[in-house]
Image: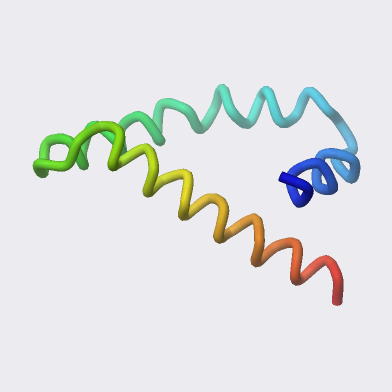
Length: 66
C-alpha cells in the first residue's frame, strides 16, 4: 500500500490515474472473463490479476529507489 501512495504523490496529474483506470478496466475485465472461460473462478482470476499488479508495483518501487 505504501508503494501506491508513494507513486500517487509523484504523479503529475491525479486525474491521470482515474483516466488510466477507465482506459484499462475493459481490458482487465476481458482477462478475467477469459480466465473464467478457461475454468477458473472470477475471484481466482481477479486475485491473480491483483497479484501480478502488486508484483509490478514492487518492481517499479525498487527501480525508483536506485
